Image 1 (cartoon, rainbow, N blue to C red):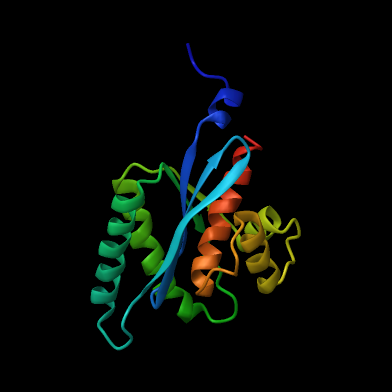
Image 2 (cartoon, rainbow, N blue to C red):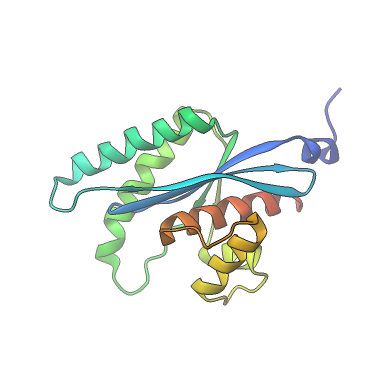
Length: 170
């Protein structure tokens, strides 16, 4: 007998949100259970500028594996790549995102991808929200005394929150 979608939503879910970047990759882990989101941890993987790109990508790979080993999430959330005006700066981010996606697939984790506007909508309720509004809502939703730092970690937590909220729509 299969579980109904309602029963599935009542199961505790551990979600890792990741904000990919070559220079800085933010991550944040939350638990979602019975409509409540509980903060667990966050951090940022910072690579050394001037090092060969392959070494930086490998550092991201090994660091994300260590985070996954420690927190053992059951699903993941990634922000979709946003090109903006400078397409050439998006290439290193895309490479980091590719490495991270491969690790998540290696672990068999479902990956939910969200546009920046979907994350804003999921966290603040407004797709045009400012970065400071998103960061403050992350703090409020997770019951933290201050905004998570650095910014990339707050963005990763926002992706995880968006993923938890998206489950309600499934």
